Image (cartoon, rainbow, N blue to C red):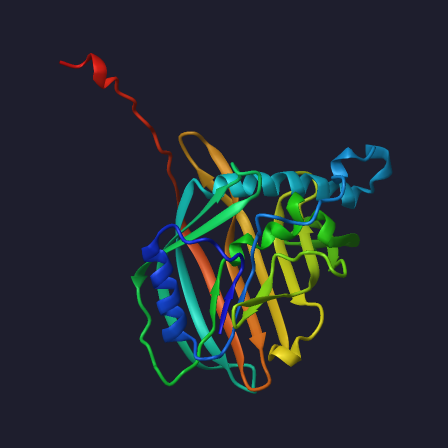
Amino acid sequence: MRILHSTFPPASAKHLFRNWARLCVLASAPFFFCTSLPAQTANPAPPLAEAPPSTLSPAMEALVRARKLVEKYFEQASNVVCTENVTQAVVGKNGKPDYREDSVFDYQMRANANSGSLKLVESRDTRKAAFRDSARSLLITNGFTSMLLIIHPTYEASYIFEPGGNESVDGATYVRINFKPVLGASSPAAMQLRGKNYPIPLSGTIWIEPQSGAVTKLLAVMDSSLSDLGLQAMRSEIHYSAIHFQDPDESYWMPVSAVIDVETLRQHWRNTHRFTGYKRFKATIQVENLENKP
């Protein structure tokens, strides 16, 4: 079984082979999950930012700010690399892991919107491979750093957003925004079975810092059972935090952890992703005029 949160087109044939090899080696279940941002998406509703400010509640104004920052997030994500620690666990009936494997990767997500639609490419280079027990069926989860697609303008028409009250955490107050899927609308999450995609309706809650619009936490669960396809439940919880960089002095809001639980009739998996050691880079291009050289 495999879960991705965006089916990212591979950067090269090498990436394609590696992804499918990992699917065959690590996943013996007959289906996997993916989330994708297709080239053609549903026509978005008029953005909330176009509504007169007086018609929006403070909570919905925070969502407008968050939506703008999410667009910036996908731009900034292409400028950083980090270390990703992944724990893949099989969970027993007592709720505790019966078996686990740990891996470490050099991680980067690249975003490209030049073609008019957002395209995401996720790159992983293995730093430390997990010990592999071929008798175990594990869950592969990729791309959950892009869960913020839920509030990206591309999917604005796919969800209904409602204020969920405020919540104080460690002395700070956050706005909670609840979301639920629009029936029949496109979804950034899908289960792929025998080459066919089945959209997964997601509902949940987003925690937003009201002044800046920064998303600090996102909780998403499967809105309805897909038991006829083998899926009973799916839950993902992603936390974000400010990552500080120097020269120039800037802060990016980036994911720091993601926990994904998936259950079928016979199996329960829990994967934990932790992102550390963020480094920012900038590419420079030097153009030389060869015609004037001797």
